[in-house]
Length: 143
Image (cartoon, rainbow, N blue to C red; front, side, top):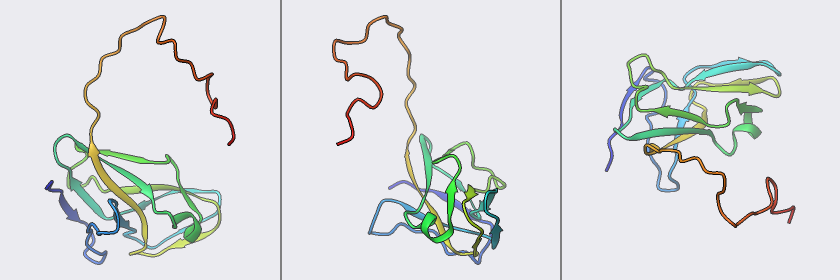
């Protein structure tokens, strides 16, 4: 079992825990936030974490986040590596609002999981890759 050391910057948000229903761990808004349509903002998640060596966290919206609040995570997926682990390295969710919205402290707005970091790779340049060719981007068609 891996251990994540966590610092809560706000004792009023729920403690994080993994559920038996999935592999992702919900994260909570640590502040009340009004965001106007067409604007960018960051929502504090109120936690800092020290991830296990060799792991990184992938942060994504929950499936209901857009429906409930009309916000999109601006970078599609957040990557937090294990070097972002200081007392003031507070996790946040960068968002863009498609409608005026209000997020309340304690709302479950995103989720994360930890995954092994990519191993060191080397690139070997070549003028020919293989005889297999799928036909380029979008080659699998519509159906």
